[in-house]
Length: 186
Image 1: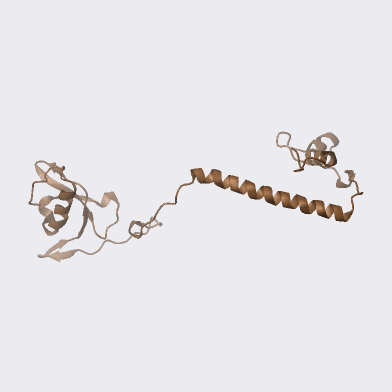
Image 2: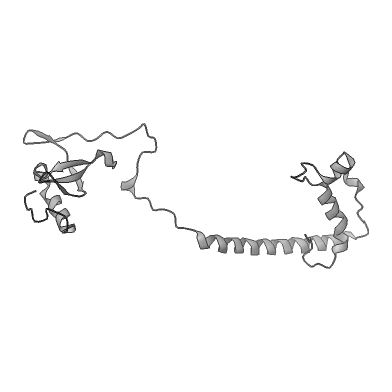
């Protein structure tokens, strides 16, 4: 490890570097080398520091080191940013219609049924698929106002969808290869 950017005064940094190393905690030994050797932690006053540097020269040197450190930090930040941006992904887009309750015990009650010809009915939000079962055409239906949980979808026979023929026609036109497409009766 070298502590000076200019690398022209390494000999002045040896005593503080040695002190820092010997006084630092080592994870493998769980103690500092100084404590292992002497059985106590060192006193800072025991480190030999020369006092022959005038205050003005020391101040200039400190300012120079601070500028070097700021420049190197800015360079490092830009380098880290470039590296991180290579693997950065855009945040997910949340649509208001796709929000769900974050508290699992709370849920929104389904809407009340609509009365049509003295029958309780719920409004169809979307037709999801279709298939034949025992020679009858069935559609899985998502209901308006109910949660978007697939467990809430129901397979309805085509005869139950007489009040949403427009949705049936839209589904059939979107998926013409599905079985039962030519069946104009829903």
